[in-house]
Amino acid sequence: MKILQALGAWAEAVFYAAGRYPHLLIEILRRIKRPPWFPQLILEQAEHVGVQSLPVVLLTALFTGMVLALQSYIGFHRFGAENMVATVVSLSMLRELGPVLVGLMVAGRVGASFAAELGTMRVSEQIDALWTLSTDPLRYLVMPRFISAIIMLPLLVALADAIGIFGGYVISVFMLGQNPHSYLENSTLYVELRDMYSGLFKAGCFGAIIGLVGCAEGFYCQGGAQGVGQATTRAVVFSAMSILVSDYLLTAWLFQ
Amino acid sequence: MTTPKIQVQGLKKSFGDKKVLDGVDLDVLPGESVVVIGLSGTGKSVLIKCILGLLKPDAGHILVDGEDWSTLANDEQLLRMRRIGMLFQGAALFDSMSVWKNVAFALLQQGMGNKEARTRAGEVLELVGLHNVEDKMPAELSGGMAKRVGLARAICHKPEIIFYDEPLTGLDPVMADVITRLMQRLHSEFNVTSLTIAHSMMLARTFGNRIAMLYQGRNLKQMSPDELDSCQDPIIRQFVEGRSEGPIHLQGNRT
Image (cartoon, rainbow over all chains, first blue to last red; front, side, top):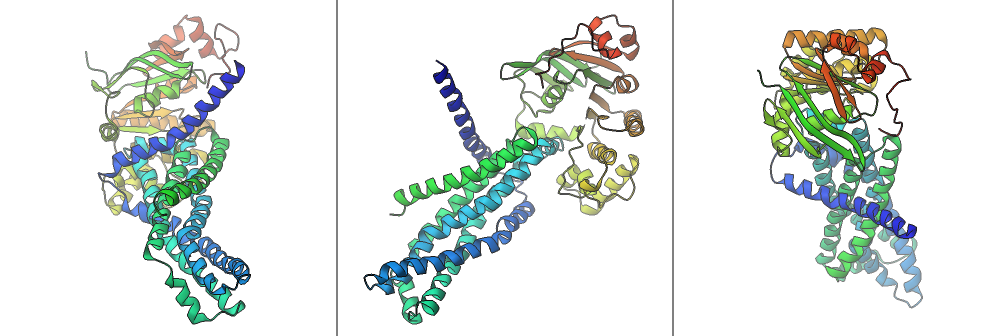
């Protein structure tokens, strides 16, 4: 009996937590059709999500591209297919590593700050105060963050793709002594535009996940400073996990 | 008889199996100041949050000017919030904005121009006795100043009804007196209706036209300060005199 009870309580907690995300999403979609949209706030958040994430994201992409070139060179070298390094680097950056790594980095940086900021506003009653000043907190706080995350993630990923491929080029050409001309040709030869689009589409989905999870954790936060801490942790963990799981699902079903 | 400005009827709210409000009835007449007193954790804040629509009541009605607010859609209710001002216990200033933007927030959202809104914010800040703080950030303010800015924000859009959530908590006696006088002045000059929750008897006596005591999820009685002093109800007597022995069951687990 005890075990069943514990199991029930656990399931209730899980479904309660999981129910918050769709709930918030529905609330956002209900509002998004009609103004006000607060374009000024969307811009502010876009700067926070996009511009300020640039150093982290680009550094990650650069080193990923570099290490990718090194590693695949080691593999291909064993059966003399070194010229395939370029293709592997650009394909995996565009289709997979660009969106996923940027998604994870932004989840850590931005998702956490969404949760902490909204959570603090919740526990210090600032969200309630917005309501009493006839401003819908969901519109004013959540929607700009959600929208700017969806817009900025693909843009970040596009830049990260370019930098990652550039990193691979630098390593291959200057360290591994490949021919620069044929490297560039191999980079594009087997790559289709579809590969890039699929990566950018994924990035948009990851942006939505980061925005939704970060905002939901903060917006529904309870229990003072400790609650804010837990919300922040959950925001990072849940959004990172959802990014990885949805990455598999998107790849398996949409972009084979 | 005039219609009450605020009418709370049979309001019930529980969290899980904790019954916080269990059928509260309360009337606030136009231009009146009602103070709700009660032990910590008897649901005073929950009462205000239900009236404001921040919490959905489980049962009961909330009528403002005879209109039922508990059944309104979100947008409708937000529009009606323009008639409301609220001073939060911790002032709840937006810490990403300067003081004047905080104060003029409602006006800015309603589309007033920056210059005009700033002038208006300056006037209201003057009214609460603050000078040259317009460009400060909330983090630079002391507790008393933050409270006064919060008060300025609550009255900047000229509301008809002001709610005060523990307006004197955490203030030194001098500042408490300053705030009380301010509240009284607002009340007499602008003819607003106010509903205050407090556990300070001093505030209840000086500011309340009528006082209601919440106890175990219900309100016991609404009475004038004089009636309160002569009231023989043992629970009310114990609270008014601030004794730890008596018929009140202290429930430590209620929040």
